[in-house]
Image (cartoon, rainbow, N blue to C red; front, side, top):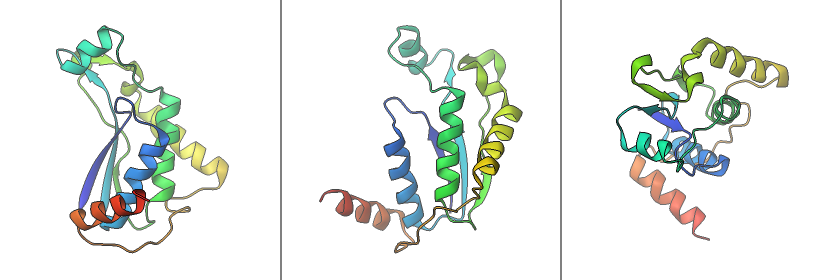
Length: 144
């Protein structure tokens, strides 16, 4: 199973990111595509952004959160993508989303400087091999 995750959803925190990764790890994923939330013109999120109700995360936060994901997923999970893209004429914010090379280099640099690799903080848990079971297991664990 290949999954997509979007980092920087409204109200999302690093704790939410960790919880998402925990559920994905319990699902036994084979691949992952990691994206940052971006705001496209003429959308409901664009309206919220223009009213000042939502601010996208910074490039530094995205880099830190992407590294959090990469270091906590199994080392054998295929990373298909660590950036998203949008047509420039459709993009409202953030501008840094167009700097894909900078994001990739920055993620790589942060991992190298800390001696981290994909999966270096992964802890094997019971893998359910089923999304519904993994989500239910997660809910049971967090209800206590």
